[in-house]
Image 1 (tube, rainbow, N blue to C red):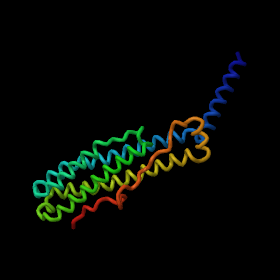
Image 2 (cartoon, rainbow, N blue to C red; image 1 turned 90 degrees about the horizontal axis):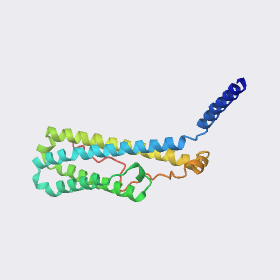
Image 3 (cartoon, rainbow, N blue to C red; image 1 turned 90 degrees about the vertical axis):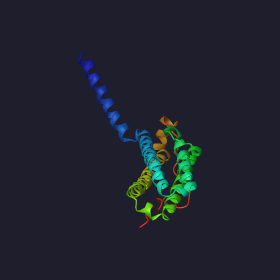
Image 4 (cartoon, one colour; image 1 turned 120 degrees about the vertical axis):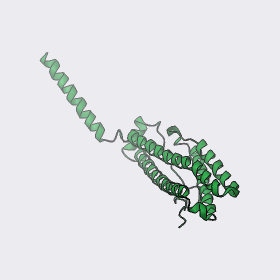
Amino acid sequence: MPMQKYRLTWQLAFLILMGSLLSGCGINNIPSYDEQVKSAWAQVENQYQRRADLIPNLVETVKGFARQEQETLTAVVEARARATSIQISADDLDDPVKMQAFEQAQAQLTGALSRLMAVSERYPDLKSNQNFLALQSQLEGTENRIAVARRDYIAAVQQYNTEIRTFPGRIWHSLMYSDMPIRENFEATTENAEQAPQVQFE
């Protein structure tokens, strides 16, 4: 009986030692960093959705003052429809074709919004409308949040990709996580894409 207790104590001590050694050697880094990538991507989508949710009210407000700008308004509505129709799940983050389609749709919406804001310059009553000013401010804030979310996603992808390409992460990747591929990252699809659209008119 004492021998059994002694053996059990040593087995428990061995398991605790192995657990602490493995946790300190980076074995969990790859799945942890992968979860950070997915979380950062969810934040990117969240901010793009926030922007999409602002657009119907913005379009309606502009329409009330500038009905003759139907072509521009229609372009914004159509670009919003395209952008919201492309969804990227966590499983699609390593698919360059899907990522590029998503980025292009969002870039088209950014361009359409920029044109809409430029059009509003011609309508002093619109520019001074409180609802328009509030939406303009929210849109500018959202564009800044999108930029921050994209930056955080890029950093998370860089950390993950670096881990699986360098020692000791490369070893753990080949032994245990070979089904977790290199992640695609954002690439600018339009000139000055890293900058938020200019929406200040003062």
